Picture (spheres, helix red, strand yellow):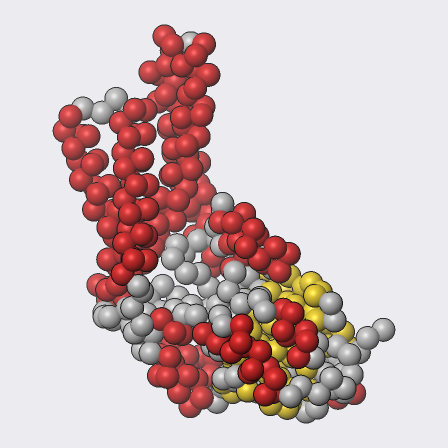
Length: 374
């Protein structure tokens, strides 16, 4: 495993501790807690503030039923905590006019405000857990220049970000595989983060997807979470399962050029440029690039690719990170968009990372039908 930099772990833990301290201050101010209850709450929040980092570190080293349960519980709490922090902010904002105009009613009003927002947090959390397991099926038509006649009307299933591991287990992979079998595409593209990077049985997790046998095969490029774990083991398992791993290489599938780049090389501008140049894409033939992150678009367009398939963003996964992700990736956060002569399709992904929740986004598989330009 490639361990997170120590500074990064410390920073994440500091943010989590600060968030839990804010929850304690807010709860103490809005509910009439006695000294014993305050002490119990402080201890509980202190332990919860350490839970996710501890579970993540344990999850990258060990695999057993206790670690899986701990990781799932800590990840779920992380999502609930996110909503609690924003609810706590709203508590103070909602209490401000009461403090100014009706101080005599303030104690009771604070309890009502806190109880009401706590109820909304519970509803949002339950909805997010349910939504994350309800995979949506999207369909769209993409026109590719120089599309071979044999590809006209062909269907490709596009998947990304399954994040198979302690939360999304073999049963989840089987659910995705069942959708794929029903949609019956001619080819499957997977744009990274097949695995979560945690310590788990990669063969068992991948088996349902590897059992799929579309006529033109399954093609995969590595994402950042493959690099969190033992990347070589992950890739060898996928290759052994019959999946074509495109590790900075270009292949041809019945007249269409299919390329794939690994995540780490896309983080370096010069590396990415060199890799794309070595692929020697023929601009007179249709071409598709699997690139986990919707980035380096000028280089990809310049290399001559017609379509890039990406994931990574999760669409932000849960509110309010949907806003932050939009700020980082703009219109390429999700959906099909053009960058000059390059078309970019970004999926919100199938699985989740961190909180097993989806609020403001939805997990998806995308069935693409290819057609020549009108």
